[in-house]
Length: 463
View 1 (cartoon, rainbow, N blue to C red):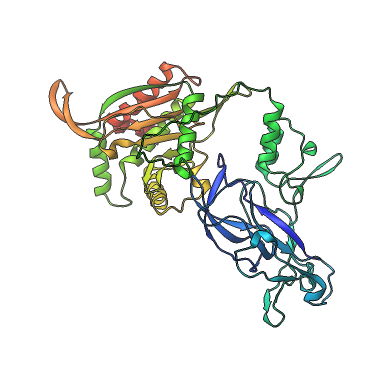
View 2 (cartoon, rainbow, N blue to C red):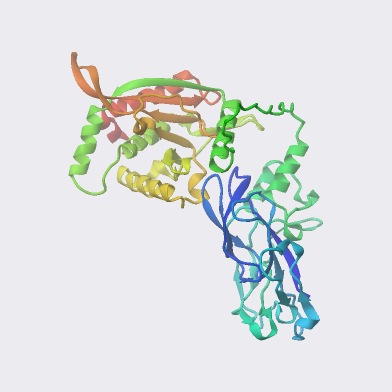
């Protein structure tokens, strides 16, 4: 008999707890292969095509387009062929579509006889899915082409196999867990995976299972007061805090509630920086952006003040200083504010930074950034000068330790060489986590950034 497996919405990245169904890529009755994308969802960070880890026939879909589902909710069910079935036709092993599929079309049947799951050749291939919380690291049976059998009104499935589950082997036998993130999370919190019952398919242990066990093991914290509904006057419009807007609200609230932040700022004469940029662009090559120059200055400053390229682990009461700079930058799009991350920014020159900023900005505007390109930042650069404002008090991008804000660069009266002159002036604001350093360190960082803006030749010492 075919086995009907339930595929749940996987963990799509750090901090993402739900996703909205944008477009189904399969219908009930369609045959899917292992790792074939089956649905396009929109998270708070990006549009993602979700691959199914099972090969077989779709027997049900859960959720209409536009529905928001939490991580771990059922997405669809797949009938997977069982090895050793004989070719006895639909009468001997047809599986009707579950009631959950009602309204999604006519109810096809799955030909269990044709759903044999072992490869005659003995060759194997690995599942390629890379989403967090599920996946296959071991080999799966080789798949043959799948053909519809119109004459019998059924779908014949040839040699479709469920992916093998990577396991952590303990003294009492294997533990069904796949994601390295899940294993690391359990290890860092001294959690025995053998004591957990997974909520995923076939008892697979998901990240949500581990996080729930960790919360249960910790001492109960004081419960936060329940939110009080706000009365609305007649004619008021209520806009749901969901998707990206909801994620931004949660992240900013968490930052302000957990991080004791402080802000310092300084005005800087950017005349020489702008002249240096003009000279670089006149020399040809990749156009150099102001953001790239500021990013290069930031990485040089972080090399001198590594306290600001860190995060705080309150569970162990430790400051974790990070080995590399993954530089986030604020990008305003039609979908809202996004923070793409330039990985290994400390190892890039100005030309490389300019090209990467341009690539990520374009991807953000098109809505095609991947979760990997939106996570993992260690420091954020926020150029709010593009909105025509001079200053701001940035909110730290949790769990980072600092953010540099840059205002507009405009001509202003300035004392230069002892005389009043019109110079191009910019305001720089640094918001920092007061747990990782004191004002002297933060002020030293900001002063170094301002000095490099005023005298770009200082950067030559770091190149």
